[in-house]
Image 1 (tube, rainbow over the protein chains, first blue to last red):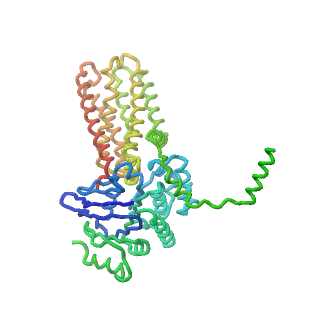
Image 2: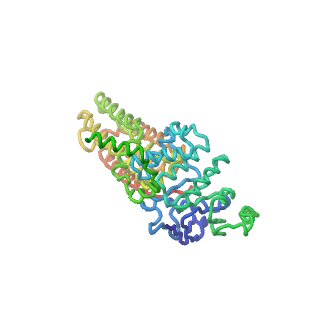
Image 3: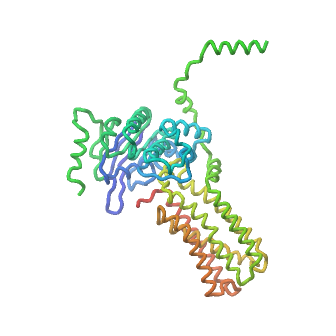
Length: 233
Length: 237
């Protein structure tokens, strides 16, 4: 199980949003850190096959990104996502399950399981417009897991979650990462250092650090802040 | 004897409790290749088209046929002015993902946004095609005596669709809803005003309708291709 990213670049006119990133991700939780505008979301969108790279390639076990087979094994939680206002939480999960190609019975079972896992059982029958920010985020996490994806891409997944929900989320992701590839992006260092076995740090479209982070290297947050001292030019 | 066997079986079940399965989901997942087929997917998407769209479209049809029975040649433009509102449901459905910010989620699924749009708009388009044809056939002869007069219903419809798709490609969010509502109203008003200025529905305007028909068909094909091309990739803002 390998996600191969080979010299992936995204350029808009003269601006290079992602600059020749190459890496191979295996099973485990990979934390992607970077300040706003570093290129994390662009990079994640390319991994999800919803943005075509200007150069390079992305593949998973031989399947090119953006193909139907690749999308079948993908789960994605965007940084911002909407919802159809007349949907309840359960309707939303069933709708997303249909788009992911799950048959009706399995979709129902999976939706029920994920509603319980994300503690949305009491709100599942209510319209999403009545949900708090944290509830919507949990719903978003639930839809990402519907098809038991081999590649789970989460963009700022803990936004809006309270501390208890954050801890619960970390447990779920850590467990999931044991058998799948999880790529989790955030600019909150504490979300990653407890969960990710592999740290990726982006700055101005480039990877400036990759690898595990051990105690011998010092404080991850201090290292991270030092990289972005002085702000973007 | 059979009853006894059954009783013995029940007693054994009570005595020897089966152990909990280990790794059941992982084992089953090896064989779990059961996915929705494209046909099943299209049927499911049909059910997600809002009921009001079907009812609204049917309402336009019935209003059109009622008007057709009571109009004379000079006021046939009323039907042409009504037709853009049939296209309103098509545009609303086209822009639904954009209006509610669901695009990014829908792009990353197995049946991506393109398949979703093809399924829904294909079905709606077919339904509208049937309505337009029935409208043309139900209106008494004398108003639409020949195929060339089919343009009176097709041109306003396809002008609305092509103009609407062209604008939908350029906007996101709430603006998409305003476009879906505004374009049909604009085309309807255009038909009404143009008819006041020129005798659009007289026999001398046959060439005009022929050229208009050709133009809107080409424009519609172009905009449809560009619209679906946009559903293949998330457009950066």
